[in-house]
Length: 399
Image (cartoon, rainbow, N blue to C red; front, side):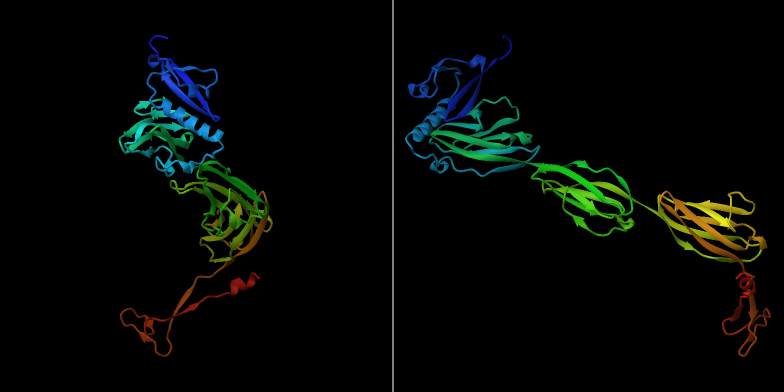
């Protein structure tokens, strides 16, 4: 093909190890391979690629290993004393990984391989990945760098060197760490009190993240659960609220997501008090109830329902209370009232009394120790003491 470089792939097989070589069409040349090499490549007498300085080193490494294997000499990685052993390299996804190989002036040829693919041979790049670059090729170091590392880059990398016709290799394992990510979490849930709840939180990352569940409602029953699954048996209203799933693996900050758990329960009237109001004054009866879903309120007097807009009355219903207002209390308004709170799960009621209360009377103290104020004619005792009289005759007749 004109205008484009065709790529020829040459596969060398040695001791069940495949080495893939890539060479542009324009650089291909026929080269005779020594007979000792040929016998390990049945049916192949010639290979292409003109500039393959590492080819012989790789082949000789295979041949040497093969011969030792055939002679019954065990192959041990510890036999190679050069290049020096390398530590594993750990990087985070998206960062750059540097692979360093220590060499000296005895080295005649060097190469970096990833599994079966040659990345670099000397200064020549064999791989097509633009992320892989040669970082250093000096008398003491032969290093490459992989930019924007991803999980598929993880694995073994081999530095192969040729010294005095003796090939040596050293291997390093690239470990790619990945920040935690929550891939699946339960949706918000609504359940009746006494039911069972199962929450799920699935996360990925390298290393595997730790999953933690936490109840964060203000009225939370404190607990922490370290598991992907959170099971709540016989849930109560106190256990309603938000549950937070946290995934962490020390690679990056933990990621969190929340699930709202709504616990439904029938109404419970928490406050309903009788009230005393003088005739002609404004009076209020209050009924407070807790319920999920919110309760609907109704008011009754002597088994007769009171309607909104009824003359002189106002019924005001909110989520957790209902207020019955009398704008101008009359004798007919006094008596027993019933508040009924209900939702889909049940209902409850409470009774209260609107009773007559006479106006508070204030009587000046004129007993021993009382002092008359000549400025306004008022009687006072020390700092003005008064007697508070509250007639209860009207209240008594209601019972």
